[in-house]
Length: 475
Image (cartoon, rainbow, N blue to C red):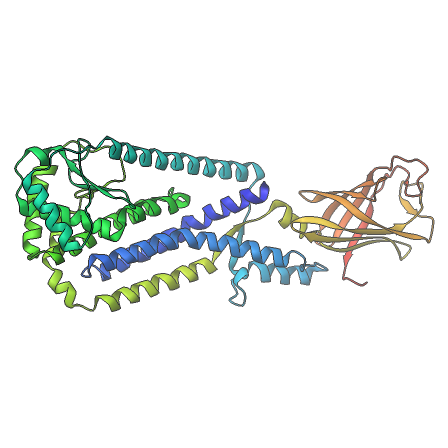
């Protein structure tokens, strides 16, 4: 569970700054691309969203993979090796991808609190997304068929011929204020009730329906649902609201361009948008939240009009080259950003590295206990080689009374600050307390005896701790 919490908080930490960098770059690129067709700007903002989601995820995945590889390789023998290790793992060297990661330490309670708060927020936003999807389906189910006026029928038939599409059902809905598209496999057009009663010019109807058929041709309903879903892990970030807003705005521009390009006159299409906005949007109550793609869902009518009017100009510009430059720049910065990351230091893993190595204690110049620590997946393991019998001196120090050695495994090691609780042996394990005093100095005290009083591993009650030193492997 602790590992999962570190992954969640690691993704959270990296997304905070990586999303800011990526979204800020794309915002600057949008100034460079402001004269380009809407479909090109839309592609850049979609790439921005995908990068914002994937870069923190890839960063955490690389950290996990690098950590797994390094887990069995790190050995600490003396101060120089320790300093070299710190430099290798924490420096900003370009020699290895993993070396660009900086650790961030959290108290266990804070780490767990952040992870559960993040999970709770994700669950809340997922439920909210589900509710809006359900609301959209309800709007679709409550729509009904009715007699279609001649002007609306003729406009719909004309638009279907322009786009070369099969018949799209036209349903009357009292819950939309402008023509809207719902569905992907079997899309329908929801038409406001006022369109069946009021006299709307056929040219205006053609413009409105052409825009909605452009949504269907581009599969925007399905893509919009996809964008909303994949953005859930980073929906807490303020920049993501801006990114999704720009995606929606440029999507409308792209549909306008597709629709206007099939009609005889771009100016007529722009005039129809203005007229429809005057008659439909002015004074209309706000629609309930749903994912139906309406004609005036975004508040960028002025930009849409200007974009339509300058379509011939933008078509002549080197739009594709500019878009490719922007895409390449965003991709390069995303990769570079993922190389400089933050990772949540594993309390166990970061602490265990301080104990890894070979520790010895001596009596009259002769080693009688050797403890070998190694770290495996953030846990201390290893073995202990010691004499089989001990005697206690008058000052309470335990000293060897035999020249016979036995080797036993460390069956359990619990790290707490500078201390490690050690259980050495099998069924009759002995409990020791290993206390780190300096980088290569430690005290060890036997705090629990083997249950079997006749065991050769049994030690008298210890009053004076052993002093251990870390030595190079093989010494």
